[in-house]
Image (cartoon, rainbow, N blue to C red; front, side, top):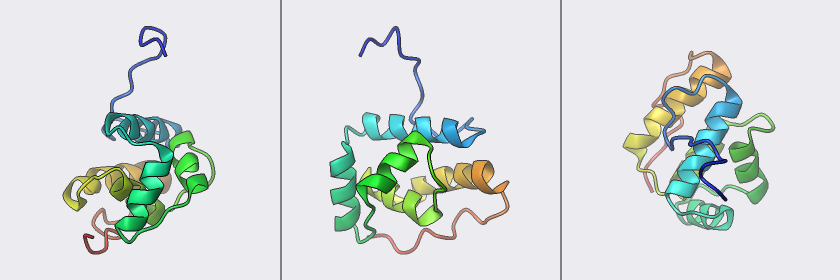
Length: 111
């Protein structure tokens, strides 16, 4: 892939205002963490929060109706610690639910 032809999307949820923008940033996070879809699936399962390949693809493509627990599983599969997951969950709430949910809910126990 030529970096001049591909716009740079930060692996950070800040600034995402729509589901497709958050999906692009999740994909950038996965690339920045040097994770493949299969490694995210495997690592999320090992962390006790399994996610399917289809759900992982849906999250990074912005398709379907994502759930918070799927995002947590994805973030764990990318190796993101619970404290850093809060920013992603806050962005998820902002773009998918209008910001009404509590960011810390849905985190569960750290594996």
